[in-house]
Image 1 (cartoon, one colour):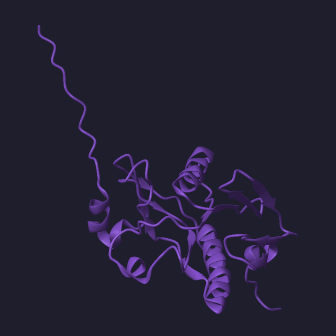
Image 2 (cartoon, one colour):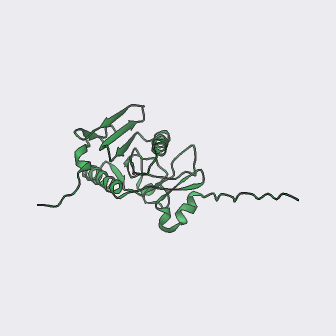
Image 3 (tube, helix red, strand yellow):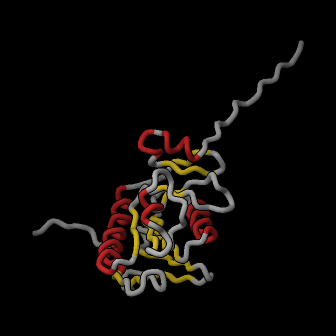
Length: 196
């Protein structure tokens, strides 16, 4: 009797260009080590990302400070792995760091944002969120906000290693990345209600 061995099926490796060729440009996926990673999203996390985008875009537009991008924008800006593609829930680039040509070019953005916002979804694992935060900072982001909806907190991490937790009664700022930007944390978590 002879034993037969079977090889495990090869794992398909994807490239950043493969992601762009997918339906909707691979929206809903990131690319890490050649593997597609499906993003966990919830209505609440998308709603909060939209609230942050709205506040940040209104302020930066009024003061001509830079570019704010919403949930779903893809970034290929990681020097330690040029094939990695991540999607921030909201991000900001200062005008002096992202040219109009770069902003209007096709494909993944290759300039690391100055400020990255990640909103934690119910099924996100702590290691996953922490890995993304570290990757953004190591790539050159000056500030990363991680928003925890159940706790109604914003954890801020600066490139110099400092950090702070903003709670519901605090006013969130983005110093020194977006000078003058302030929003009460409670405003970010405010939910619509029916009038009585």
